[in-house]
Length: 278
Image 1 (cartoon, helix red, strand yellow):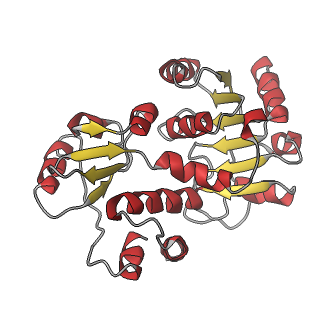
Image 2 (cartoon, rainbow, N blue to C red; image 1 turned 180 degrees about the horizontal axis):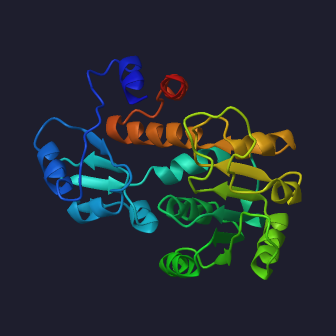
Image 3 (cartoon, rainbow, N blue to C red; image 1 turned 45 degrees about the vertical axis):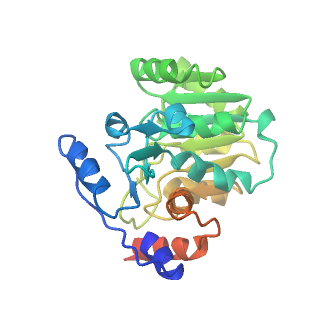
């Protein structure tokens, strides 16, 4: 994706993947600062751990509590920022909706959920609910985000057909939600032959409960479309998949590294699609 953009922009640059462990990360970051390396993307599971090895953080990186992009400062030090937030927001901004009156529910409270909460807070959603299946993890997540997002609430989530008090509360939240985001890996696989017996974060009954104009945003993108988005689209819902977030965060990183604002997003998207097909 990035190499396709470099070629289009006639930059003699190369984007390569480098393996890292928690132990080797510090040395890798340091060594790359001593060569002609203009930028770095950081992936899971290092987005939080890398912070301790960076001289400076941007406000959005501090707010998100995670770094996925490093930019080389004039003095050679690394500046850490977060383009996942912009990557998530960009498809929503194209909808021309006043998000200040809208409610969102995030399924899952793992690593990617923090960037989503940051984005929804910046879009000024009136209500943000994080749903998870472990009360301790939920409370811990909300506690770390509460100062940034005072409108954040949490609810226990059950994605099976059992009927409990928690399930009833979750279903009521679903009925009121304008935006539903899946930040879990549920539904992710290399390929599938049919939707039968395939895991989705919401049951068919729960999808049927959603508002007619509810938007479904699935952060995963393999397979494409995901089972959740296939089912939601068949009911007429506006659907966004994680590939667009991937492309847009990559484009945001590229702008920071090059200083070029008009980057070839369409070529990056096509390259990402080709990579998925292969």
